[in-house]
Length: 95
Image (cartoon, rainbow, N blue to C red; front, side, top):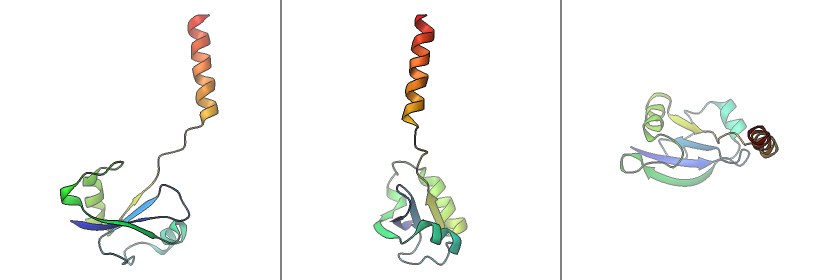
């Protein structure tokens, strides 16, 4: 299965996979407005590769059922909260 991958100009780390290059007709208008202007990243054959951050089988299933797949970036970790939790754990284990 061949698909085209586009990145969002509004949402860093968000990618849109579609079955036909430059054919966004299966993608809901509201999603396209949120996504912004798509920038072509690459065309890939999903049968011959794995993907770094998403399950290729989920991508294929979504492309077959919906005509597109939206890859959403993982949530941003709050570094300050993580630091506080580590410090608390260190203090709890030493004191």
